[in-house]
Amino acid sequence: MILHDFTYEWDGKSHSGKKPISWWPGSYRVRILKLGDETSSVQYLFPFAVVFRSAKTNAVMNTSLENYIHNFAEKISREYSIDMAKVMWVKMDDPVMVAHLTPDRKLSGAPLYTISWRPVRPNEMAVIAPDITDF
Image: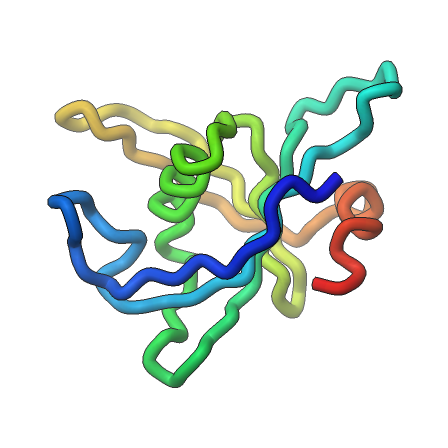
């Protein structure tokens, strides 16, 4: 089920003293999905999926989230009230990749993450496919 569908843009500047997703501008099309349905007895380990792809509006806004996925995940999780640890982060590219964020430790109150990317598994793609046909 599609919960949110939007384009997320940032200008690479710090407003209100908070760190931006990256220090370079970027733009991504984002779709937040709830996996499964209310009537099913199946419970998912990752009940949400955030599917995103570059929506570059001009040549300057082509920042890749590959190195900034942790900042992006924190902002999306905070803004849309979803648990970052229970989300499958899916980058629609060629090939489609899934990010796994593991909190390592905290440094001055801010968590650090170990990030690994892997190709999407066929069963994961099957679960999100009905909600990304027009993505």
